[in-house]
Amino acid sequence: MASRAQRRRRLSLTSLIDVIFLLLLFFMLSSTFTRFAEIELSAAIAGAPAPSADAPLFLQLSAADLRLNGAPVALEALAATLAPEAKPDAPRALLVSLRDDVTAQRLTDLLAALRGAPGIAPTILGRAPQ
Image 1 (cartoon, rainbow, N blue to C red):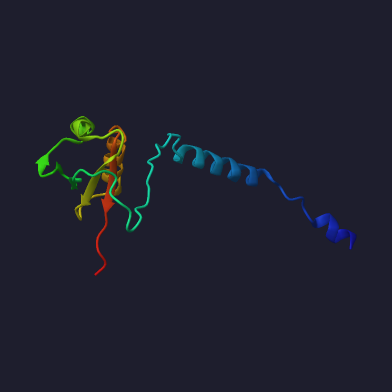
Image 2 (cartoon, rainbow, N blue to C red):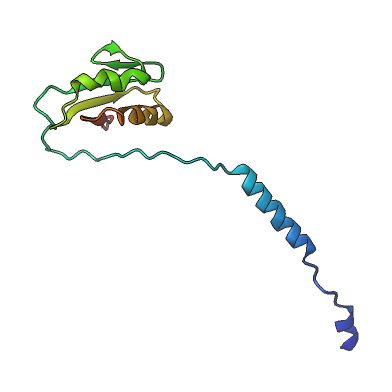
């Protein structure tokens, strides 16, 4: 029995420490340390009244262009274009229609631009179930 215990070698932890260091280095280099912006979304309630008595504005969003009530508008100028339409006491409804080619990033960019337009209540129109 004593010869068997003498034959057993101690387990070396050097290779385990090397692997842990390499994993730590990999995760540090592959992660991003940017701060993500938050976009507030509110769910529409069925049967809820419109935010104001004015007719809602209609915004069409596609991957290439943006149209407000049929007229083309730049994403950067959207907040300035909507400023005269905004109502501070009762938010004006803005219906946003999405085309099939719209990406999630494009929609997020639109919502971030709409954050700069107070007095506007955007509602994203979904596709009807088939």
